[in-house]
Length: 56
Image: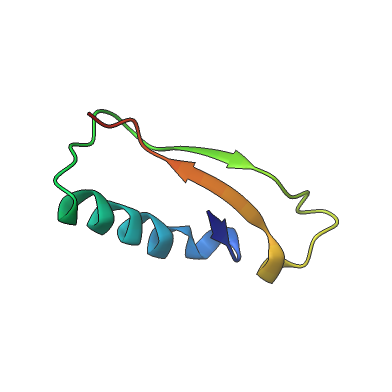
């Protein structure tokens, strides 16, 4: 889960990919994002996004 401005999502994606590598998983496609916050109403530091990869 990424909680921060959208521009800092690459940091979370890199952490997720490192977790995948360390645990010997294999990414099987592109990541997708589920936005849980409304950017019109939420402070950028509190924006919440679920980032996930399909893996095998």
